[in-house]
Length: 476
Ligand SMILES: Cc1cc2nc3c(=O)[nH]c(=O)nc-3n(C[C@H](O)[C@H](O)[C@H](O)COP(=O)(O)OP(=O)(O)OC[C@H]3O[C@@H](n4cnc5c(N)ncnc54)[C@H](O)[C@@H]3O)c2cc1C
Image (cartoon, rainbow, N blue to C red; front, side):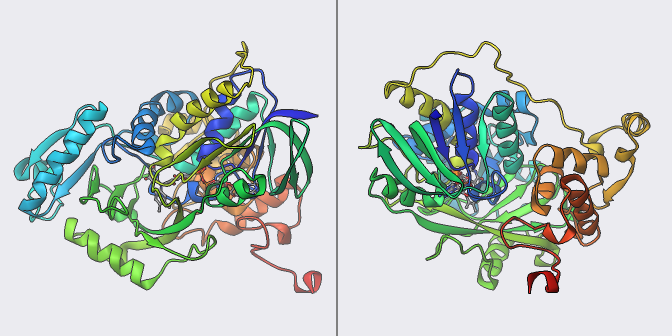
């Protein structure tokens, strides 16, 4: 069996590419080393669909940021994930920064970004009364959106699988060879033969390219720490608030997430290890000191959870997308921010590149663009909730009290592919509230154990050896 295309990596980039390829009559496999999709950088980011004006127009990421931005509405309508265009404000806190807002506006307009408006102090504070009174002016960008990035990954993959994608999880690519014109991927679960290979392995794309002899570049991990705040602060800002950017990052932001929590971050610091996802006291202080100059009502005491993600950074600070010196082997590397925003545009570009490289594309007439709608109990009216519970009592049993997630939703998530506590959490929000799973984790584990027919001790937080309870005698 020889696949037409094998995609290495199931982050937002690989997931978007997989879904786009499934529009055609192709045999496609996606290989992901973790046991859940989107478990790398794609679940640990700020969740912003950038408005389109931040990245410079002369760069690849600048071009794909705006193109990708415009594709998310259709994807959202088809695939059912958390997404809303809430708009953003970039704020000038000193008079000499106002010129930078004008420059940002001109950069956006040159790229075709619509709706940008400069607001004076009065208008800014009218729209965002909790901003510091030191604010001088702001640039409003209505095209900015917020998204649940992990849900987007799951929805894209679920749809791709509905359309014939083969998914190989917990399966790392460990070597690459050639047999005539076929690429042989050596994986932990055996050999996979393919005519074309798309390297979308994020932080590890340099190592995959080196295995194939298809590129000599280095990815450096740049860490970003993010802090989630109690829902008490819901509504403290209506738009995502940006300070003015630096060369390395878009700055430390105040983000009203899709589910109503406020998130603050990220930091931007190069680290040595691609596995270092720790948060730090220094990062915590940097984030809260910075955001309190923008929104003084935010207190570090409101922090309920924290995480860090790693940007995959190339020396050029741009994306590297295209065919390599090796026939059939396409690199998609350096996908740092705004990679989430750009992912749908990257996917279209990859299809064009594959066609240029000789892949025959024949439209699939029975392509199913849409996913069935998921039950989100907390978002239903009382009448809809009662109707649902009458039809299926498992939607009447609340498992996560903070986020009002029911047993029925958790069972749906497991049947859709969740295998771990985090898989359930990111699909349903069970465990994402104030108590961070203190009350519901054991119940979720029972449901995983029951539905997957595995012992309680086999349940992990995020795969591998991240067991939650252990039987000492059994493990020695
Ligand atoms: C703190 C932070 C905030 C950010 N905020 C934003 C934002 O608000 N908006 C935005 O647009 N972008 C943002 N980004 C950038 C965005 O998150 C990334 O560009 C995007 O998630 C990259 O996706 P990816 O699929 O390329 O990589 P990943 O999500 O890392 O996926 C790569 C996958 O490849 C798998 N893999 C690796 N090696 C192998 C192997 N050998 N075999 C099989 N599988 C393998 C990994 O397990 C992983 O799942 C942010 C990034 C960070 C770190």
